[in-house]
Amino acid sequence: MKIGIEAQRIFRNKKHGMDMVALELIRNLQLIDTENEYVLFIKPDEDYTAVKETPNFKIVTLGTGFYPFWEQLALPRAAKEAGCQILHCTSNTAPVSTTIPLVVTLHDIIYMESSYLKILQGSGTNYQKFGNMYRRLFVPRVIKKSRKIITVSNFEKERIGQFFGMAGDSRLVAVYNGVSEHFKPVTDNSELSRVKEKYHLPDHFFFFLGNTDPKKNTKGTLKAFSDFLKQTGSEMNLVMLDYDQDELNKLLTEIGDPGLINRIFLTGYVVNTDLPAIYCQCSVFLYPSLRESFGIPMLEAMACGVPVITSNTSSMPEVAGDAALLVDPFKPEEITAAMIRLTADSDFKAALISKGFVQAAKFSWKAMARHVLGIYREIGAGTQ
Image (cartoon, rainbow, N blue to C red; front, top):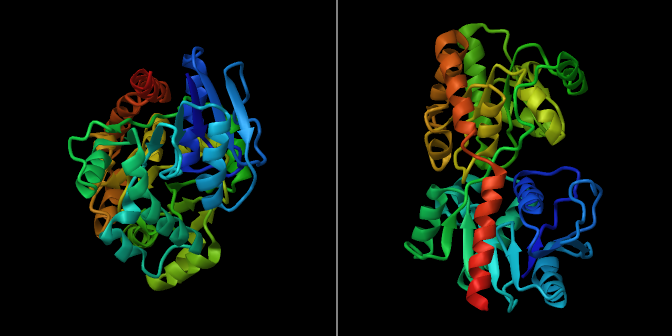
């Protein structure tokens, strides 16, 4: 069987959530499947070390055209020319005109929900707004065409089922994401020092993966951190990743604490293999999102031996289990209280770390790849 996988962004340098999921799926399929043939459809980019061709994995580069044209026109044509018997699109959308049996990974339908659209008003980048508009237009049509719709949690499966009237539809299946094996406690002091120097990390800090997407709750997290400092007089700092300083200053002005900028360290983009050394040097990992379909960073932090504060909404309780401190993300005072507890109660913190190791071990990319391979085989058997 010849299987096409849309993996357009896996070779870009700055990979993010969906890119990493597609990359780990491919890497692990290469380990477990030597029987089927695969064709990976990608856009040309810079990081060609991410995946290598093997005897049964061929890489086809399609041009750099505007994303909708790449996906709706170039991709189905190339998949047909390659003789693909299945086409798996990994990033929420897919071509609606293809005659090839279609599998789509629908990570979430946040962009379809009225509650999220209200939060988004006046927020988010133009790129994010266009992406949401594109998905709202195409996802309902993609769902109708797909042989299988993979999503990443039972919570999201239920949301999709309810929203599109698919409750009980056998085409819709939850396949959990995993944790990459390099996420583990870092004990090499030279590696810890290298990463600390590279990203200019302070000695004591909370770690927060905020970005401009409103669902990440950056404003609420900053308010909680500001209140934490006021209530405790702590020397704690906040480390954030690739965030624009001008946008950050606007948020700090909105929460009434512009001086907080002196306690915030912006790292810029962090290479994925450097993340474990950052997790391992932080006091607490903050993940109080308003809405998530899964939440891989929670598990990464747990696997590194770091306590996690996350939300009691959407998929986060399902993924975190009893191994994180859950808060209402719409109430910054609850985030603040959780910060205070984890910095003051060492026994509770140690117990949460122990539970985190157990919880993170339940999720692996190899298990995810085996599940997806079973879906391919099921569709292949049905088309013969």
